[in-house]
Length: 316
Image (cartoon, rainbow, N blue to C red):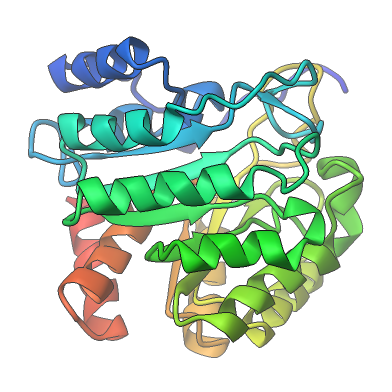
């Protein structure tokens, strides 16, 4: 792990600012809540928090990170601290749901650290948070980005039964690079199994994400997309891997935006994914993908109409 490569111009972003950003941050601090937006130093935080159609235009979106600030796993791409696990906060489901209402989010993403120290991996706590959010905010769409729960199908089933609008679980990279990118307790086949179970047991939309720039080859990306589509994944996102610190994996390359556009076309037009958000700054929870789901689920648009509306709104 050596010195960082110089970032190209297309990866430069504006730091988050504005009153809405400040207000959301204060609400989170008042309730002792955490967002993956902050923990992962997401480059899109200001854009998402400021409003889904631009700064000051109304409801935004945020990704809440459940079950603490520390993860039981140590993935080499991730900036979340590892070890020193603390007890779950029994008030967290209610606090998150109340914060969603107070902030005025019409689309919320719930994710979590891995909790291998808990018997069910934290599935019951996660599911309760989903139910609280849906009950207290009936007009809000809920997307969840879940861990693999160690491959425990009963744990995944608890998430399905809680009734989120989208269930995401990230494959992160191609099979050859699962280690050293991900913790050894994660795995390519286990991720496919989780996504396949959601598709098999529900009508909930499924989603996953890949990082590019880790040393993957094109044929490996294509095979990964094919495998994901075979297990019924509906939405896929591509983004550039960015090294959080010098102690994390090096960036192998900065992938040009044109390549991201090519993979979008392959995913949608050749392999039949309902939607693909693909670009250097795209992250798993990203405005364009949320706008697509919003148009699909809330407005009852066709996938083609939803794609068109999402792209138009995201480019404004």
